[in-house]
Length: 603
Image 1 (tube, rainbow, N blue to C red):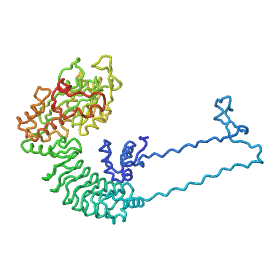
Image 2: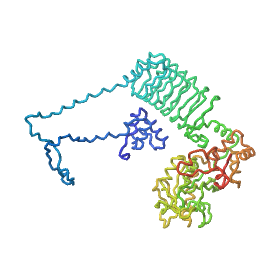
Image 3: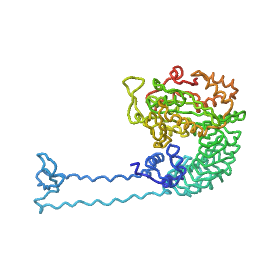
Image 4: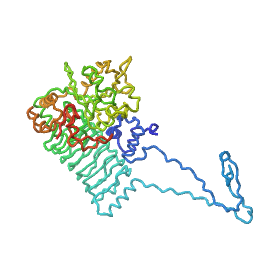
């Protein structure tokens, strides 16, 4: 079973021909929490994922069960006497009238034994094992086949090679060569004719020995700590998933660089660079842009002074234009960010809306209706020294709305999971919209894992509502800070308010400098009574508030990510709505029938 299987991270890395840091990064990118420690033990689920990802059965750790031997009855003539004997198993069975009960056929007695020879079975000869070919022999076979063709590409990947065959050096027609997924520690015998070379997922710790004609080079998933000794002919370089702490020199012709998942704290880029992917490093400052740069991927770096949403939604987001506009606006005038998104999630009937009223110091309303879809609200705590503007997103708890989670829960926020003990135990609850119908309840762990999956930069709080006879309000049994409250009687709701405020001010985006003119647009939208606006109207507000024109769309994206409004081009065409259920609302439903109580920008 998965719970019984485990393997050290270092052992799995050796099987996969990767360093342990690369394996940990790959697991982390897929949502598995793994410490970057060689002695960390991977569980069965993680090993199964790696086995599927890299097609390596050695990680499965399961032996082929031994097949049971099946006795095949021998044919006999009708007049042959048969000898039976009773066994403990057959004695208890009930037989038919045609066959003896509890008797087993063990053989036949030949009455005329003198006239017949005794049958002696011929022993089966032992099978001769087929000798396994060595990695070098397999490589030489591929080289021989290559020489018989007019092809210019040769694939020597996945052979388990520990060295590059010397026979390769003399080949003159190779243009593209793959030596990926082997166990190479040194680079040698590369033909001078090679232009495109893939050495990914080996055990290389340096780059000496490369051909001087290489233009496209892949060194992903090795053990490199620096990039040096690279030929100046290289124009495209990939060194993802290594352990690179610095870059001494760059090839003079380099145009495209992918250096994701490394340990870089700073980098000086060459003037020739046109595209840079440097996600998941340790950069604290935005590198200076070369004039030719057209693409920049910075997601997952702890860059100070820039809110994470400006760096993009994921590794595939080109954030160059957004960062340029953001920095240009900051250069004009800035102020510290005080806006934080608060998301309330939980089953229907647990009292999320009543709890929100308590947080706003409004009296309890026993007739309050259940949240329909999503309700937007705001809470402002303006006393110094840490004022907070909360943009509240109260998500409907009915099962029909679970499909909205991938869209509305992604941006960094304080995520408040609300439940009550009675609902947590029940599988269903009455539907407050349709009489005589019920809705399915989901457990707290579902919401916790959902938030961790969709919004890893968020901070999670848990509130147990409708509690009575509270002795100690704090309980961390869910693995997150949990508070027992009673919204109706205002028990510990002030404590929850203080906890939310403290958590909001601990968000990485709190206090970050934000463009002053962007905040003027946010203030206008927050005070507006309109529920929806067109994009043209939004642009008009930007012009009036003196926002740089090239940054209009970047501001719109930023306001979406920080919870001020909702906006997505072609959002209704995504599959997110159908992932968890049957609900796929129309744009008319969203914009004209008050799906939001605040703002929605639509085309």
